[in-house]
Length: 352
Ligand code: NAI
Ligand code: PHE
Image 1 (tube, rainbow, N blue to C red):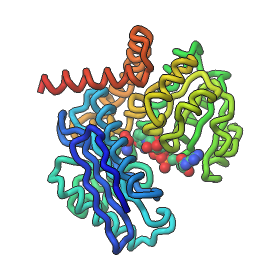
Image 2: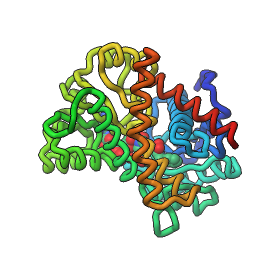
Image 3: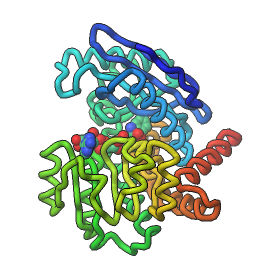
Image 4: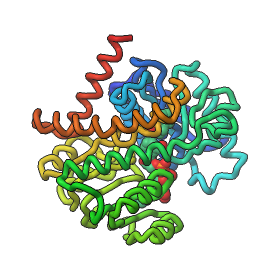
């Protein structure tokens, strides 16, 4: 296997391959500038080690942006565990061994990298990582953790959806067609919230049970492969990243995009095409910060419900600022958000 060298602008990226379990482990630390690096553990299959490294590094960068823009005193990091078979087909003993090795890797950072849950891992998995000697956020409340970050993420995404809708010229969600891709922990809760606002839901998920639950809410289901062709007023991606490249940005039929999926764009070119077509994009690292606010706020900054909700409410103000900057500077909202994150990071660093 050949690993391409990449210049990703981060601090370091550690890779470990394990023959016994067949898993490959990647920990990418993008920045220590504001404090220890934080970012969840993603466990899934990847087509190659290259793909796993690329995902970890891009996700770690997104964490740096997310944490800086929210003013949280942490750097960005991410773990990727490239699984030999889908998570559902791993026997419990092998999964446990994978988590033990992961904990050993995280512990090697000596507290400078803190992990937590992400796609493919749960609060219960974080209990195991923690029990094996590596600090993990988002553990179950029974072991002193703050539990799933998904409800807070969904509340933040709901705020972002409403702001993006307003920027696209809609006063309220009532009567709008909202297309949601992915009805997992975050997407299902966002679906409930926008349905309660009176939106007409169109949904897609590879998991039939999740689709059935949304249909009970009154949603119309579409096949997962059709999502990017379906017309909507608002598109809410809550499944996987990398779904909007410049071609998709040129053809997607919606007025605004705001969702939870990290790195929903493949790059800046897609953001420019959306901007050129007048499609409002709420950058994902602003819209989906709720989980990080919930975990980091409660576990590192001693926040309670009031402070968490105040920080979530800031998502709307941050988006308004980004929409205004993008219009004034004639740049995409993605670029405006990155500039804002860099400015906030610099300000926080010099005030430390
Ligand atoms: P999840 O794993 O609970 O849900 C993801 C859902 O997407 C699942 O129902 C899955 O079946 C579905 N899915 C996967 N591939 C799909 C496809 N091609 N088409 C349609 N559906 C598909 O994950 P969760 O926690 O809901 O997170 C969703 C997204 O939000 C992820 O990208 C995650 O990185 C991001 N995110 C989550 C946060 C959290 O606190 N949970 C925080 C910030 C970002
Ligand atoms: N994985 C989530 C995210 O991408 C939540 C998380 C935040 C996990 C911070 C660990 C640390 O935001």
